[in-house]
Image (tube, rainbow, N blue to C red; front, side):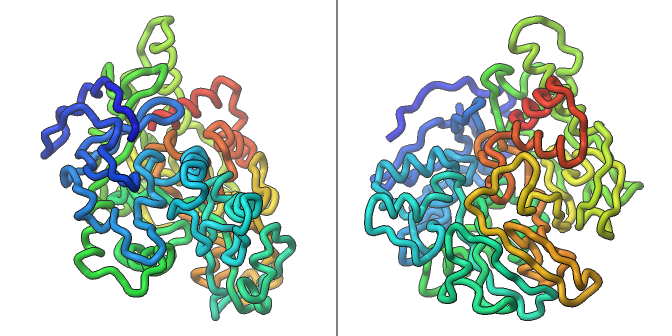
Length: 468
């Protein structure tokens, strides 16, 4: 059991609507299996830059009585296996490695079905076991096996596959137009779901309910779907859960001195689909984040004040720094077209940062050689369009994205625009874990869209993202 330590309560935590809140619990009361026996309404988890808080609008959860925490399949897994409260409700390489070392790889997280680079990987020795789970241990990546769509407008060939899963006929492609394609993705957080406009990186699930069923049958290897009551319980838990950074190691409480960071205001944030759609010039406000406006005018040379001012400057850069957004399928309607915008053009949900309508986008992270990102150990795939308006074009990617759902060439590489709250707790970033840090994320955007950020501006933007 982790030893609890004291933590100063954010100044607005006692104002959480509809709940009697004490100080956030930093350590869980745990069962012998490591699953928390009671998840308090407000909990805190240390992360590399401070502390993130999670709040349940529906109150504390007795986990033994909640399907999200129950093993409903045959391999010992539950939802919380891959959505760890101590890792921003996702997984991190640090946490994965700790679980591997503590259990010698016996933790339910380590299952060949999707935790290994291929379901046929050998785990007979310690060395082969480490190789089998290398992407999970190194980047928190799970293997996602997808059938080639029957209506695909493209053929697929494997340029390279370090994991040999796509080149093996028993686990991979059987022809350029048939079989199974394995891609490797990070688990999206199971928190802040009230703001979501699409489910899964490629949008393949229609709702949280269908996702819960698919995960139980697939990841947990259940012999039957969860009951309707269990499905409803999982969805209710996720829909009522909020997570945000609460304190920064240097700036301190993120709701101090007029700022509105932290989970309190996030839980109260109004949201409707399309609330701030950047495609609607009459309804779009580019000032998407208004959490740290009060810190812009702070004075003082002390470290905390300087950190707060940096966060406020980063927020301004995110909202207002204009640049040319070029060749982003899903945002622009045709290839090689561009629009003028800012970070908030795509991340347009107020104070949350995902896209407020169901529109997946391709910013180039799936490219075989994306600038400033690490895609080593991922398969390289060549997709040749054979039908549709892009017929004759060839794309080289590490993940076809939404195209594996729709079959359309125009959807190659497109992924959801994720919620940005609670980022500091869940590195690495992007769907394939190719950015180890938020600094690498900013570096990618700086190069991809020629933002021309100074070193100070890059630091300010990173500090802001860490404070979400």
